[in-house]
Image (cartoon, rainbow over all chains, first blue to last red):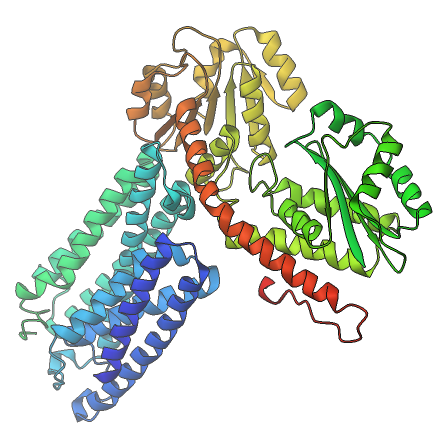
Length: 280
Length: 348
């Protein structure tokens, strides 16, 4: 728990630095942001390792990943966002986008630390399947991608507004161009959508094995389906109608709102996926 | 070792005098200096200034007025009314200030740094440099770069054409794949087009009511001329439109832009209207994916940039003074056997 708290504090500090960098042009903020992120990710990985050791002390949990609780899921999700950003930033030095992406890693880790119950329980028999090491991970990778797309989308809206206003500020010259942000948003979704789809299908196969049916319109299933539909709509409109820029970002933001609801809100509705309400 | 400088610049010398100096043969100047015993010298000659830096190595040094006299003899003109003269630390600081763009017509401009480099290289080629002038000029180039990196004197573009190009980059990123449509064949259109062309745009189309003028300009610029009635069709594929016709009424209506947008699949369209009166209907600015900038928008960005630079000048001057002092401290240890080091430590 200490390690996760440390990671959270480091992410929060890195986010603050990312915002400082956004409004000053001093490279040192960006460099320190990257360093703090690196240490934060290291602490986070350590925390995951400790948790795994504890989790495996319960015999029936052996060799399954501790992702059956809201705490585990949030922790993994924020680690994925942070690690992906750390790698991308280390390679491409897109520090300016840190301010739009890092808040998600911070919020994820913070929510795990503050709101989620870290208690470790034995896995129920239905969850004792190798699928638990795959199905949630795949979906959360897609979620992490969509979170990044959302951050890029916010940057695009700011940039669009700046240029449209005819009074661009310094920020305008430091953000990537409209076309680059638009392409990045699109490329991330092109990556995320098939991952989401595969994750949902895996869930169906697991459900068939565990519960004897592929699809049951459980709230989680329904909302995951809606999310996939929204992103499919985004890609369709992009390919067929040439939807770009501001309006495209709106669609991808609705998609992300649906992701957040599927991830958090649905736990109160779902009988089978309710790890937050403790029913799952 | 001592450095002297005589110079004439846009600040106090009339253009005619500067022009006469600019055509002086550099070889001749170097030859006369050698005859007089000066072994190291650099001539910095640009359209805004003519400066002669001379240093004496081992021989008895001379006052700056000596260089002025020499220059007057070579050019056959009386220069003392327009010239400035400096010696020692003052000359060092002046060179650093020039290299930093602080003495330029447009403060912070970067072209001067290249010109200082060229002047130095020309002196090297003429074997007119030695240890002192090598260190001095390499130091000047370093200070020029440092000032532009560490202060805001060079931030922001200072001409409407370069602001337009910069804005285009905030929309499209690299302009390498972009195509540009120029409406009108006047000098403003040409200037902006040349700026865009220097960023390697993929395609340049020129349209003008009088086709022969479009064709003429297109020939000069390796562009393609298109008939006036064809330009609404071209709107469907270009990324950037620069309009500067002499028309009394708008020639590019919002309806024309709207119907072009349908064929553009959501690609951005950047329209620059530098005509007076306007060429583009204001309603076009409301359309999605259309970014319309008028001459006054570009001018107000230029004015803001210049204002911001002004505040940074003092900071830059302080940096230049500190670096000049550092250099002079190094100079004073020359030949003492305990030469101070002059590292470009912060340069990396």
